[in-house]
Image (cartoon, rainbow, N blue to C red; front, top):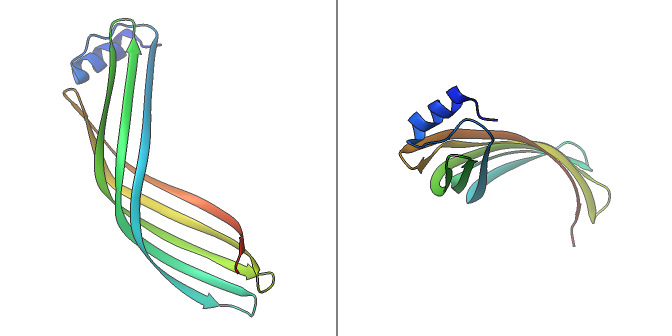
Length: 139
């Protein structure tokens, strides 16, 4: 529920006429990009290989924003291209010549993206940790 003072702030920021009451705000992101990655493998034993990696590139962010309120509705989308980077580390355990198990962690970050909606500019920076567990087959 959108309180009166929140509606006033949104109206000032976006130049809208939202009324206090039930409000639904949704935003969706779609990201496509590419990175150049460099990796370094470290043989720990016959079956275990550790790895380190870094990557840099560019990603295209698309944001779809939808705001529905009794007073007014707003739907808009915008996009931005941002610099992206990542760091990876983990280990592979060779079960045999064909099968391997890999476990690792990845930190990925994106420089500030800016999206323009009406008279407002929304900016954000995104970063995330991702954990990987993989069973792979080489042939």
